[in-house]
Image (tube, rainbow, N blue to C red):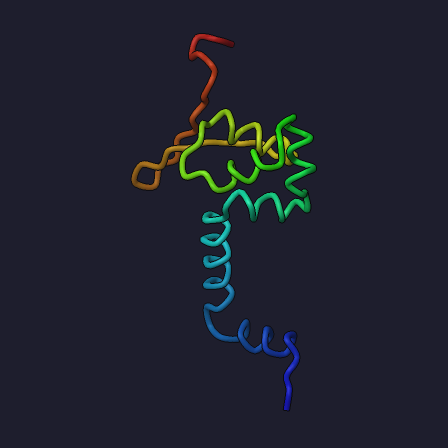
Length: 107
């Protein structure tokens, strides 16, 4: 007998601690999301994003597969998708926002 996804989902959520475990897994997954998945989640094609950034589509592909990229490039990519890039350092649970591109004495 086939079960619907909804029935299975409710059965899983009924288990003690399941909602918390699922939320943690979701958070971990989102933390590991790549640029490709980020772009796809915003329903933007490589061609459309390339036009927004005034670069070629192959340049977007290369960027999405890069191992290392400049923060300014990543910021431009995220902003072209309609988002805002925020950086932070984490020290034993303490989060410290990082401002890049602004001098401490600039108001």
